[in-house]
Image 1 (cartoon, helix red, strand yellow):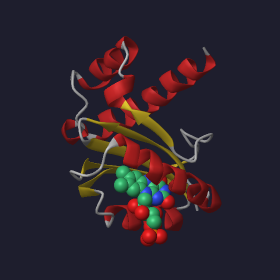
Image 2 (cartoon, helix red, strand yellow):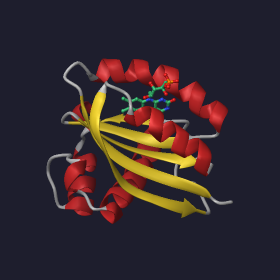
Image 3 (cartoon, helix red, strand yellow):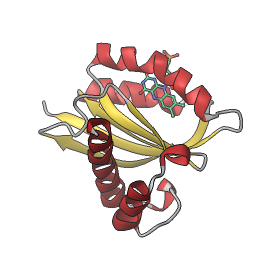
Length: 146
Ligand SMILES: Cc1cc2nc3c(=O)[nH]c(=O)nc-3n(C[C@H](O)[C@H](O)[C@H](O)COP(=O)(O)O)c2cc1C
C-alpha cells in the first residue's frame, strides 16, 4: 500500500499564537516520529497550511485528531494523493512562521507559485498549494545549509 500525502488549511483560533504553535509542535514532533509521519506546517496571517505524509491509516487518524483541535477551526482538505516518494522525509514536522520569516526569497516564491503577495492558503488550488509547500521545503533546506 503506497503512502499518502494529505494537505489541508485552517484558521487559527483567536488564542493561538506562533508561541502556542511551537508548544504544539514540541508535543507533535515526537508523536509523528513514532507514527512514521513526516511533513511541513506553514503559519501566517492567522492561517495554517499543513502537509502530512505517511501510511494511509496513520495520516487519516492524525488528520481526524488535528481537525478536532479547538486551537484552530474550519479545516478544509486541499489534496490527498498517493505518493511513491516523500517530499519532506527529514522532518517529523517542519514549522515555518511566514509572519517572521518572509524574506525576499520567501515572497518571490509565494508570488511565483500563487501570484499572491499575502500568504493565504484559502485561495490556493491543490496544485498551487502542493507546489508552494514543495518549493518552501527546498528554500528552507537551502537556508539551513547557508
Ligand atoms: C495547526 C495544528 C497542527 C498540528 N499538527 C500536529 C501533528 O503534526 N502531529 C500531532 O501529533 N499533533 C498535531 N497537532 C495537535 C493535535 O491537534 C492534537 O492535539 C494531538 O495530536 C493530540 O491529540 P489527542 O489528544 O487526540 O491524542 C496539531 C495541532 C494544530 C492546531
